[in-house]
Length: 332
View 1 (cartoon, rainbow, N blue to C red):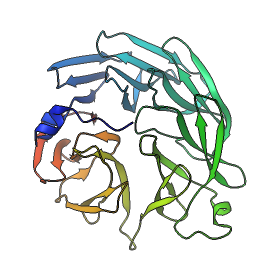
View 2: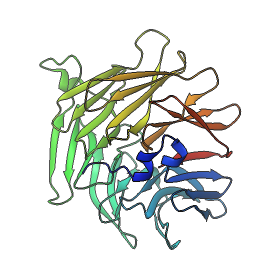
View 3: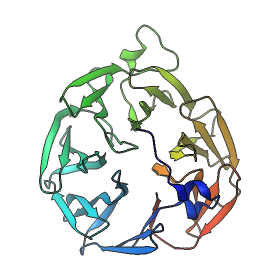
View 4: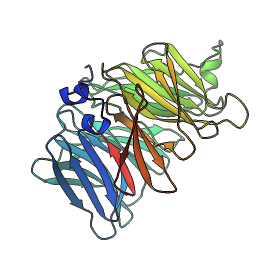
């Protein structure tokens, strides 16, 4: 399903006018600014409850999903942006790691958690939770993340003597395994991948973006393992490259955002095509990590010293200040 760009995102060069929602947090409050309808939504967290970002929007952009923690328990939340109704699923107290994967097209929210050494993927329909895959062997800290709402497939890593990617079909509850590709494939290279970090997958594009730490390389492949791109995370000694997230241009094409603190530069990679744009950031600003889609052609930057945020248009390179001070910021 192709990413839809709203008319208000296409008609203006202003990043704030292209933005539908700004999510921010301050102390125990979540503030959601609906810029399209010019209204604010406030969600108060309970005493002792803390947010574990990021936020997710369903495809209709009427519900948000997010994770919180209270009394050493993880809580999966679905909040209706129209009527303010909140639904929660409280996980067991022994859960050490958890995260949201994304909504599906029926507004169910998928999430994962680690219980002791094994991982589980589950679904929350607003009233109850159900396990769909369990006993997953994986030695990382974040299992998987979908860039867009899920249509059918969930991609996640599983590691036994070596790591593979598993494609789980929601519709027929089947699994398919694929070897993990590297930039210098050999007869045994697929069996040598012992550790992998799946950064995110995009079912709309059929792409997986992942890092193999031992190689210091990020890879972009399709769901069958065909290698489209690879990015060296330390092209020269001391110049560490960070992967910051996904951006969509006004034509609906996805871009991978990376940056170098040493060079004070951002790099905009075409995911489907061969292309790279370099942006100079100046001395004060860094690319703000946001794995999910950012508004058309707009990059979010942060001055950590002043706690100031700005938009930078990757086409025109025009900058716009966002005035609010916040503990966390996310834009849609």
